[in-house]
Structure formats: structure tokens, C-alpha cells
Image (cartoon, rainbow, N blue to C red; front, side, top):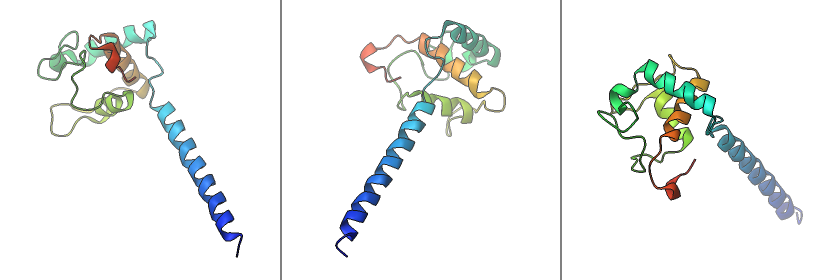
Length: 128
């Protein structure tokens, strides 16, 4: 019976390591693989125009019916994963519709790369 606390500690450490590893893998998956890539940004700009994102967010993403995407004033924490989900699935209770049936994951990431390239907010608030 004296081994039970040691066994519990070992199992607890193994579980914690597994959870930490899974969280790190998930975070890596949520990072935009195209951030800063000039070719991806150009493609994102083309997709922005093709899908009509400008109709709500303005030609240069400065806002219109939809919010300004170039500043540092966001309702939701503007991580790559949050923006990806909003574009793919839409935003309930708003005019933002989901685009996952029209755009591939890669195309959505490129649109996000384009949006990021337009950022005019405080550099200290960048979280991507």
C-alpha cells in the first residue's frame, strides 16, 4: 500500500504531460501558416475581393456594416484561431456568415494573412 501515493503521483504526472502535449499541438495547429507570406497575402487579397468581404468590412477592411479589422479594437480576442472560426462558421447573432462551404481551410488562412497585413493598431497588442 505504501506504493499507492507514488503510483498516483506518477499517473498524475503522465496525465499532465499528455494534456500539455495535446494543448501545445492544438496551439500549433491554430497558428496561421501563411502569416507574412507575400504570395499568400496577395492570394488572400484576391479572395477578399472575390468573396465580397469588402461589402461588409470595406475595401481595405476598415469597417462598414461589419467591424474594422485593421485596428486593435476587437470584441473577441483576435487570435488566428478565433478569426478562422468566425470566417469558417460565421458569427451567431451578427451578419457574418460562414464561408467553409465556399473556401478551403488554406484559402481562409490566406484571407487572414491578408487581414493581418492591413493591421494599423498598436504593435504591442499583436497576439498572433
